[in-house]
Image (cartoon, rainbow, N blue to C red; front, side, top):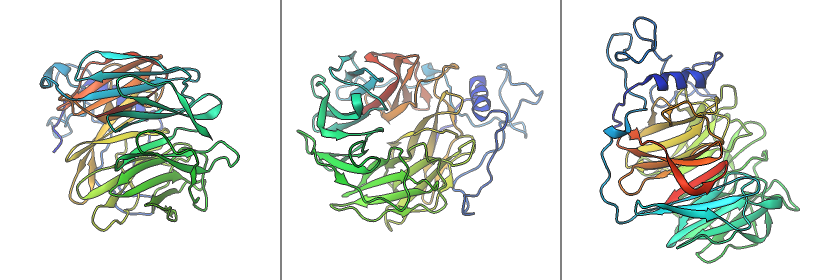
Amino acid sequence: MITPLRFHRSLLTGVIALLGPSAVLFACATDNGDAVHGPQFGPVPERPDGTAGRDGPVVSEDGGPLPDGGGGDANDAAQPPVCTSGTVAVLAGGDTTLTGTAQINGGMWSGSAIAGGAALSAPSLVALGSGFVGLTQGASNALHSVTYTASWSAATPVGTLTTVATPALTLLGTKAQAVFLSGGADPNKFNRIENAGTSWTTAGDLVPQPPTTTPSAGTIAAAGAELWLAQDGQNNGLYIQKWDGAWGAAAGVVGAGTFSAAPPALAAITGKFDLVLLYPGKDAPNVIGYATRDATTKAWGNGSVTQGLAQTTEQMSVVQISASVVMVTFRGNNGKPYYMTGALGISSISWSTPAQLLPDSSTVDSPPSVAKGVCGDDAIAVYASAGQVKATRYRGTVWTAPEPVLGASGSRVSVATR
């Protein structure tokens, strides 16, 4: 169960700003008319006197307190225990630079510029072996790899492979798997490569395309021995595809009308479902939708609305942070960072009202990245604002005060933990 939080003025302001004057709230229906999983919410209630000031509690129409959406005092969070094991790694960069930094056992951040690196799109990062491996869209669209064990390697080309978008990266068994949108002689086609711990294969495994595709990045996740790819279609459809040694045919997600300029987000989870797929809706204000795969029957459910106030036109970041909760971070239509949680039930996921990730009105340079927490944290989110990279940690039910991520700089970020 998700513990209620306090509803602060900053949350109300952030939600209202996120919606904008032409906001539309959605009824419990998908594109194909199926019922929406989880509760739906109406407009944020005002105080009885019609104001939204800080003094006094926010109340609902019946006079009772509202459930909290975030923004609590970080001092209320339980302090984490002394950390003896846990590493956080961060890649950050821009069109001409790439930086890497790490924090071991809750100590100081340590990192610097990565030679030869760049991040023309958001970098990707995953734990592999005793360290981490990352992929970026480097200079001249070259697909670059970086590694971290005790220190960061230089950025090195993966053969002659090129990419025109963020490479999708995950762990399948003991191997890192990547699917990227090619920028070479056969452009805008997806290719798969893998890394068993020492180097990447340099000949791309071409992914059979669905009937209609669009040149935006894909997303991948592993479920058991299967690798799954999700991608947008030019017809605003959403397609899923399995690799288990060979690629199967792509299939559409029923009822999932997607904003094709933004890649979807896919994550492996445990419990009733083994995969959850999130995507921006095709029509403004681009409410976030989702679909799940049943862990037993292996059947994909229909696309449904998460929560009417969750809106973005960019790729989200999603991770399971406990046995019963998934965390989603995203940049709202107003440029501010938001998060929401999903309670994993026996038949559906119940999504919380989105809340501001930060305690102030700061905007971010790109979507924030979230990973499962270490050292007593439930989650850690990293973001860039005005070129400065910062982290905030989710402990219990609140986010800590943002902290500088020393050694990292740039406008695009990725975080991973082990």
